[in-house]
Amino acid sequence: MDLRRPGAYLLAIVALAFGFVVAVQWRSQLIAPGNRIEQNQALLQSVLGLERQNQQDRSQVASLRVQIGNLEADASTRSDQTNQLAATVNGLRAEAGATTLRGPGLTVTLDDGKKGPDLQGATAWVVTYQDVQDVVNLLFQGGAEGVAVNSRRITPLSGFQGTGGTVVIDQGPPLLAPFRISAVGDRDAMQSLLSQTSSLGDLRLRQRLYGVSLNVDLSTQITLPATDSSLEVRFAHSP
Image (cartoon, rainbow, N blue to C red):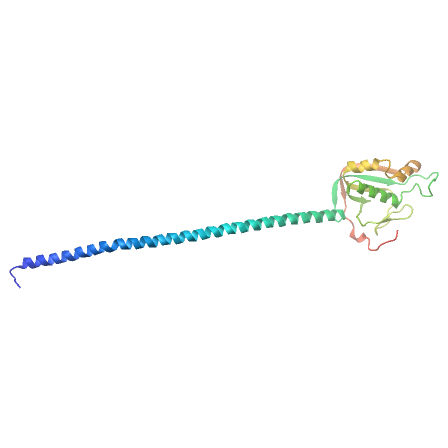
């Protein structure tokens, strides 16, 4: 070694070090673009995967919305059917007299007349159960929604019977005149039917001959009580 030339050795060392640094930088510059491409490709794959997942989620959400719509429509249909059934049941209960009934209507009052020359029998001046039954049937024929006799609700199964001037409805106690027959419904239709000369002909004849009372009073509000179930007919009776 030539110790007289230390500068040359120092220069050689510096040159070697510089060359190493340049080589490292050059290598790093060669590798970095490859890493960015790989990173970009990985990022692209991730984005594509997320897009596919989002598309699947959107499809699932759309399917769930359709199912929810179908369920809501089905529930609405069931609700409408339930409401219709409830309305039908309420109508049947009202027709059967199981509930209190309120509304406009009229009251027909029947009362015994005065004794006089008897042209039809010993009790022609007395109001009978047939007379009460005829008026009740006529009111229903005129569109009555409900009828009560002396606050006794009439049902489709009600039966009338009696002797003389007594009237027995179903299995209730005997009723005596005056009889107040109240009806809820179309007042005009019921009154029109009652006023026809062909209606209640026998009763109107006895009204003229024996003074049997037949009065009709219109009302804007009538309340009919529910039927008394304890008085329901339990056995068939011969007429």
